[in-house]
Image (cartoon, rainbow over all chains, first blue to last red):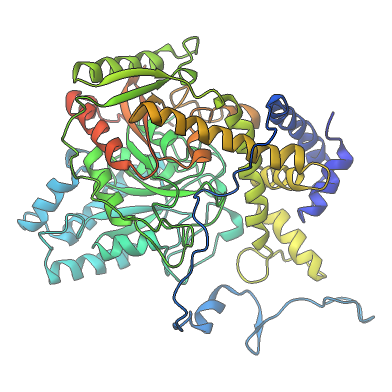
Length: 101
Length: 488
């Protein structure tokens, strides 16, 4: 088993996801199946083969250095849930000893 | 009014001759949706007022006789941003998200005079092959309502197949245009990577994603691709070369054309033998029309699925980091700290399949597994791309089945993620290589459509359309229409 429940918990943490115990079990099984399936790649001889990381072999795309009007600030704030004085408002980041945000 | 009865050119002619006004045309779209969408479930959002306003404008200004798309309706997959119209990606995460700009492809269609009538269902964030992963709605196949329409662009396919609209846009990361086109008897194009700007497309696998059209006929499809293609300053991966007229020489025929048959794509022992035999019949048809049929090999095909699921999931895990509950999208109500905003908003906002892919991608990119997974997959991708390069030294296009089955039962595969992944075996290599591929109808199996894909050289969509057009003219698959069989 390439993946155990501890790995799944670790990966969930890296992914900023919270997963309940039951789902951890399901994911452990499913991810093992998937990882087993992708491990067929191991048999492939890739010695000296460069990887392909892009959809198009096109490099250094520049645009003219010209000022253009950006999107209106008010427009951009339309989908913001909580705001104050032109900033996005979020809960306290650091515990200042005063309890809840 | 049934869009299944008309090509875009015929609709255009009726608008120019004032047999119909644009307003009447758009009204008939909403009537047809009213009449059929309770069964089909293709649309997530309708923007009727806005569409009728655009139609009134088109009638007032007059239909441009030189612009076929002017005044015609289109539906947009709901992972493509539309200014002022809710764009959800079929996710709880974006259920109330209203973009403040249009995707370039949408802007281009509007410039061409097309009228967007609404947004179409999909698998959440385009992850899936049946549209069952939508957090918002179930979409059914108009040929048989107990079957899936395919995915991820299932709504885009179902709406055109049901005759609600003549054209829709979808997106294809691993087959998400071609497979639903195949399941619903439509023409669906995955253009060469870079042909159509990805600006405004909600990113899934950025090195694989392409936007493309669904239509009933091959020429309609070429006309729409004409409108949405081109270099875009807002997408540095958009192609810097020329955009040809894809309808040019479309009726030139296939005499002397070299058609490659990739042997790895013909599973003679497959459960549904009708698929391989229909494509073989199509090849016989091509031979009769003067094409040369050549067997070729794409030896690394079997590594397509593993390489694809590593690369697409890795890119997705990175792309979906932006959904953090801060700037836009779902925010959990259950928060006491900044970390809670991220973790609880993501955990409550994303569905199971999206979480599964984020986890797989994060795992593939994580310390200790990067070399064996992500790097190895990228190398396999090079070998797959070289397979296509070599094949295209011998032939002009490749012809193969699009899928290994016809549309399956709703609920048939959703509990088995691996089986759902394996079903993409014939479509993902094309995305990994970046080449264009068009799926067209080539027959029926027990009343359900079969699709055949025509794969071309990079940026040679013209030859693909020419090949497809010749077959469409020589056959009569288009005369069959969906029957809305079954359902509750």
